Length: 522
Image 1 (cartoon, rainbow, N blue to C red):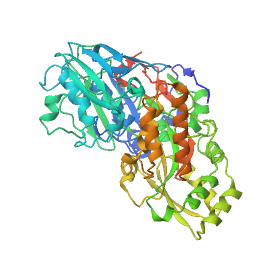
Image 2: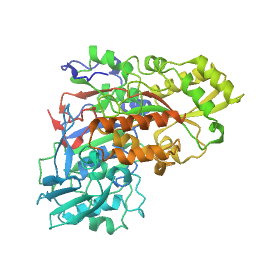
Image 3: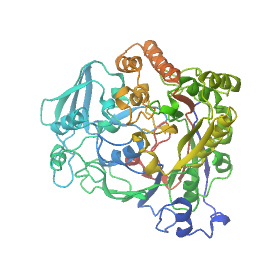
Image 4: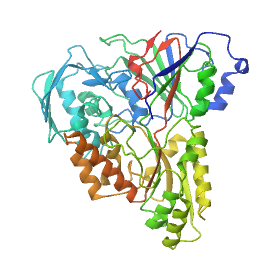
């Protein structure tokens, strides 16, 4: 899909007549979230939306971009992503940082960053502790892959040190340092509570502090009065948990939130007639959506059956019905523009019913009855219903099981899982995509429990490969292995249309995701 760089803006007019009677009670019914009833931002509070509930404020155990959107404003990293249309990074806690050779990175910290709750100034010991705890086998961090070949951090002074790698690591500057595992925590603070936290931080250091978390409702951040960097723009940031984009649109059009991603089926309407005082912006997406099949479930142990399912799923129908023509079919887990993107999938894009029926016959299976688990949001449910119809056409009965976010994101632990419609966030390096499908991640983020020695070897080798063409070929082969297993049918990378009030200046990644610490008032 071509990169989008388009914005539609509408200046203030009277609120739409169909929303004139909207109340906080009505919005709560539509969204599942209780709002304060104060329509439109008051200039001191930013109200936004996230698609899943927070899981952890510990960088070792966060669930991805949902938690990172909260962690990034309250912690500091050596470097942070730079807002804009091109992927880049900028200095954060580091006064300077330099890669002196392929395996050594020297850094010096700024001298004006301190931790809250009396835990003192940030030091190189905090950096060492923060990074090394991620790779500590005893901690069992779910985000360990992000630190790849980290050996250790050598402390050379109170505010200086050297990151030492076991081998070259290409994703260091695009994933590790500016994303989740780059967050620096207080060694003293974490050790005071046993070395691990959940949803309540002990000490933070960023421009905002964590005030509260209301499960399945919202997270509230407040301005850090002791922050010495560029001032935080808002007294408070409220991030509401709203699973479905359609529900989030209702909240936005009623003036209850200031920023959200919107559904693709609403995009044309919002572009042609944006709500008052708002802007619609389109971005390419790195997310990847796929149907996974649990290889440890006896019902799916027959590879011919899995291959029949792969060939029966009609992705073009999903693109029209679920995404309204606003997204393109994907060829794997790596989006266009990234190393390793494949030109086409091995099992095709459109359904091949003749092949699917042939494979099902060869499998020897009959009266097959399966279930697919999905997150309860409109696009996902529609997609599951299409797959249900596709499989019915070859004689497979498929039950659609819908879940709210808190339940869905724990399904990986379920050994009885059958099919699942899944969607993972992504960063601008293919290493982040393959990290979650290695053998070590089976039952954690690898819900298909697919384990391939060849895949794991490619994943380990590609992180250090400096030749772009060779590296791309390695990641393409990794996706071939996934598809050859019969456990995966790739669907789409979606697209990211956002809408925001003209009272704010959002700071967004090139894929349209928010960097709240850099949001400003207009």
